[in-house]
Length: 120
Image (cartoon, rainbow, N blue to C red; front, side, top):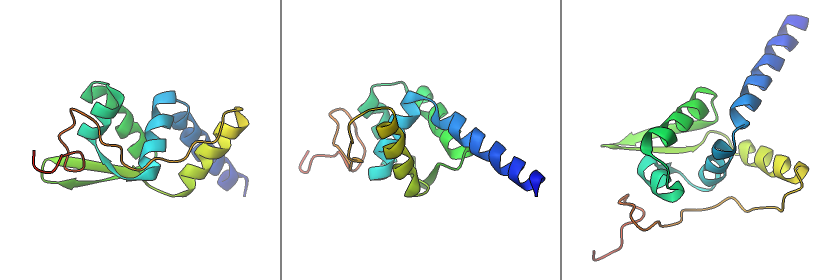
């Protein structure tokens, strides 16, 4: 029984370590609202693609996001709706105001299908 508890506690600690980065928290807040492609996240946050991809890889390895590929695009989304609850609770415990999990926000300069302007 103690070995099972220890393994679970180690898994919890690892998940919390991955969550302990401000940029990953912000990405998870976006991905809790709707799936987004890497190019959209790059445009939304104004960060280099390798930086965004590195953080997405850490979130995926921890089981916090999943992905799917359509042609050349990779779309990421939250792996579990309870992740949004963790984010809301941790934000409240930190004394922050409640923030709604976002849906897709079109970003100028992003060429993903969701941001395309009809007739362009």
